[in-house]
Length: 303
Ligand SMILES: Nc1ncnc2c1ncn2[C@@H]1O[C@H](COP(=O)(O)OP(=O)(O)O)[C@@H](O)[C@H]1O
Ligand SMILES: [Mg+2]
Image (cartoon, rainbow, N blue to C red; front, top):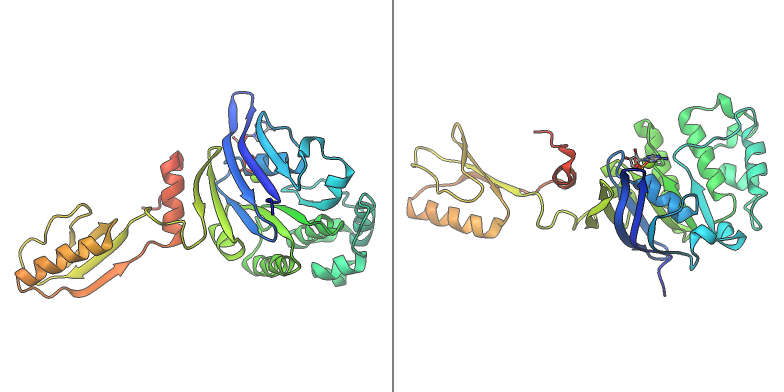
């Protein structure tokens, strides 16, 4: 089965700004792929090219077997789009907006079903300008789903949401994956990618700087730490990542925990020292992410 989305060597410049510098990835059927990256990384540019909203400067692109830049009605019928910013008419009611929008699709979900799906039941006849930010974003999602798409693009679906609205949106998006939708979402929230995505691509400065699942993204990346306390046992051994002494606490950064532990326990045994409170801390996904985008020149490290 060929991938739903397949991109090779995608490039896009805006004048002298390189928004995409040769990006390649695939999205398989039923998969949720997150493009994670800081502002300006090129996320919106990438999804807008895949939606057929923008033309690439170069690269091979296939979305549902189409070249999106020339995809006609049959292509547009099969994709759903939730833009980062929508220019929707604010004097319309929720129901009116969905009705109008849904007309452009040959196959469509009933308006009431869409309203229910995104949890706007009480707001069907409310004017859009009276909705909260989170409610507007849910309406955007309803519009994206109006044509019952196979492939849904979500550009920063929860940016600006409060924590409880984000949780609700996540639950909604998870519900869509159970319906078998393929989803390509962009986000600059690590926890969003971690919660929703089967696979994560980290984009920084127009290039993919890491790719994996929430579990594998860190492999060979940000280092673990090893720490323990010692009581007047002389200088602990020098390893690549330390020691750093803070009072009686000894800390090492470690890229190879097993080998470093061997060196430390050998030293301790030879000197008759107990490694009190020995602890190995794996980097959190956040550490990994900061490490990755920091390396790409964003300097996002907190410490
Ligand atoms: N229409 C445009 N004209 C000029 N530069 C743009 C335009 N759209 C985006 N850019 C620039 O391209 C880069 C990538 O932007 P964008 O794709 O919006 O990133 P993201 O969605 O990850 O924040 C940024 O440097 C941005 O300023
Ligand atoms: Mg964007």
